[in-house]
Image (cartoon, rainbow, N blue to C red; front, side, top):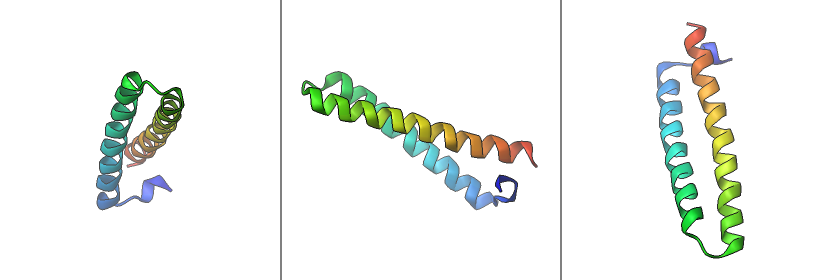
Length: 68
């Protein structure tokens, strides 16, 4: 599937990857500053999900580059 991505789709993936990195940075930083334990748990879950999403996006990009 990924070998058929167009240039605009690749650029969209880069944009999503940048956004997800920013979200992960913010969640991690805010988790360290939060005092409420429930909020810390939510931010930690968000950081874990964000890390997984980043890995998936990176996989799309690296597979595409290898198939060209």
